[in-house]
View 1: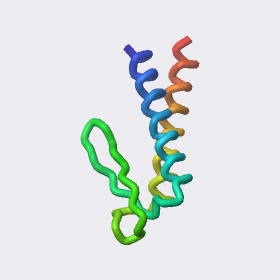
View 2: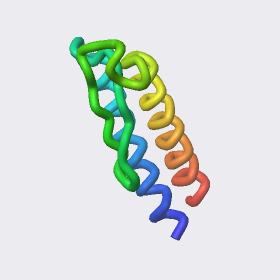
View 3: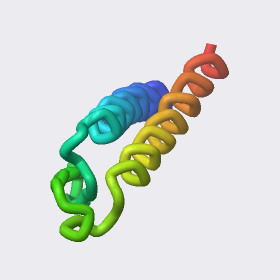
View 4: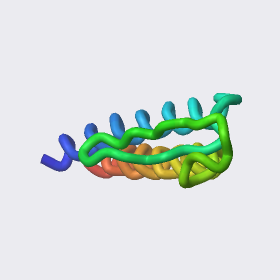
Length: 81
């Protein structure tokens, strides 16, 4: 069962990494709104005053969270063997 959670964390972490990189590299993403329940949706806005958080902070936070998820998933894989 632990292996299932590690795989889910690896997939989820990869998703956060890709979305965070997408937000950081999008020149039209000055601010971001987060929404959703089970699935997190990040909506980019051109104007810095429209979203609730700046695009750079949101992208960096998503990449940091994704990296942590991937790190702990890989750590779980190596300890499980």
